Image 1 (cartoon, rainbow, N blue to C red):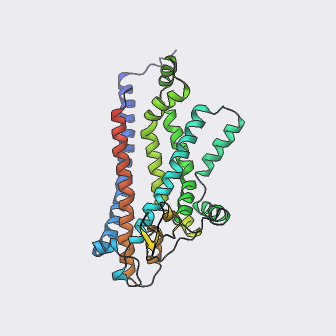
Image 2: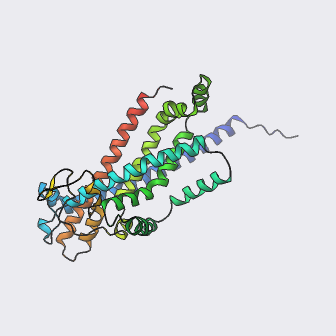
Image 3: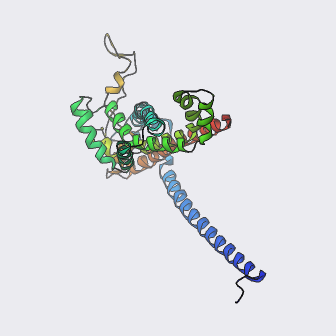
Length: 312
């Protein structure tokens, strides 16, 4: 019978062929990454070049105006921050709690499987659907109107599936020996989750939260659907300040105020025929991108600190 053993030269040829394929794949990956980065750099550079003349303090402290040179983004960036505050307060606790329950407490049966399938599907639903849902529930049924509260709850619904899925994935990454070791010394299931599972999974949970908030801050369709204003020249009332003679604003009066956000302001300016407003839109777009990058930077820093403090 002929021998099937490979000679040393054949083995070396196979290894060299495999290394060549790895090198080709590596070069293609670097090339694709370079093209993507180049496109991003060109787009950002063009945006900065167009809007650089509007990067002044007045641009951040002025309200919207029909005159491009006097228009600012004060109401837009304040509105975005307040809407994101409501969104985070509504979505993060519910999303994290739901993820922990589904992964650590829920029994594995057909009901749980249906819930998991629906959560996964909801993460891919177009945002306009959430806007229509919020219009019928928050604006009309609950009577919240076209307010910051309605906008925040709408975006909370939008990012809730993302937070739940990311929480579950972060919990699944925790080694089983952590749970077994905790329960072996007499800890209850809640104590195990509270002192071990959730702290160890927090970096991954935080990543999902920031991804969800970064998506929410740039959404336009659901905010337009519930009635965000395209032109607003006032800010929500500051708590405990006088809003009319003898009348002070309450602690939460601001949540029922009309609002606008950065994407709406950018959309409004880009839809105007005056080319001067395109400069404002470019400047506002860069500010919005800077807000998203700041959120991601904070998440990266917090994730690094949390991972550094974890002792396995």
